[in-house]
Length: 127
Ligand SMILES: [Cu+2]
Image 1 (cartoon, rainbow, N blue to C red):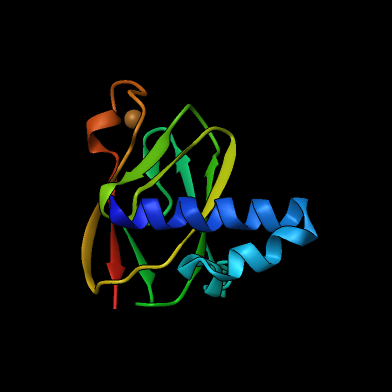
Image 2: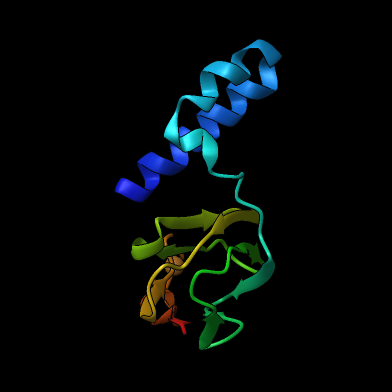
């Protein structure tokens, strides 16, 4: 939850600085302003079909910002990884995350997509 709050404040500060140059001085007093905008160093594409994801395991590197790109190739699915505050769905969507802890995390389908829904899961392995 804390991570989301930080992310939101970063986005907020970025939005502020983008709107007005004069707000830069104010923003620099904010601790969050010293953090650079999250830029992905790498990408991971996750594809969903009826009723599976394209891989059983997805590997990420700890501490490396990664742009998770989710694509629906058939049916209507989504992905959910609570530990990363990651929830994507639709035809195509993406989010940049920074996996901060090594470990294995369960990824499930976030949309009740039909008969194969409960079998739609995969592992995100951070190392
Ligand atoms: Cu589903």
